[in-house]
Length: 193
Image (tube, rainbow, N blue to C red; front, side):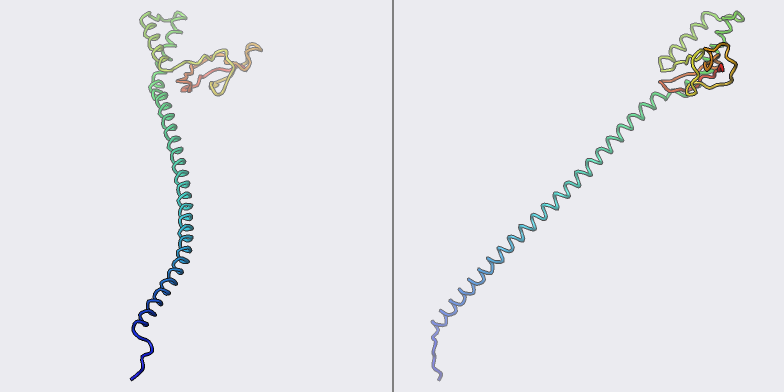
């Protein structure tokens, strides 16, 4: 038989001692790992925070650009709508201009004594012209004014009867009209040169 040098209680004490040492060592390692992992976790959080901040800034920038673009679109739409409303009657006004021209010719003819221009027709002319003026239509006064190619269309030119008439409109063949500060028909004039 073999001699027993270490009894069972001694083996249990050694096991207990070894297990305590192993636990201490693993705790030290865990502490070291924990220290490292805390720093790594902190670094990860900082990195994630920075990423989120940059994404937030980018989103804010996109939002501001989109908002500015929408505001510009809204203002442009309002401006276009107002312009459209101002010039919506332009076609109707252009269709009525020959009627006004006929009234003007009849009025001139009555002034020279060739025909009669009745009081009723005069009232109709005045009423029509005042309604059109309320809607923004204005006639251009061009006879005796300096010739301006933006406002006048030269049909012909004649020699100037005097030095002060040079470059001026001698006669108006067809009146020009403006609707809400927009020329809808240029005045046709004879220019003195």
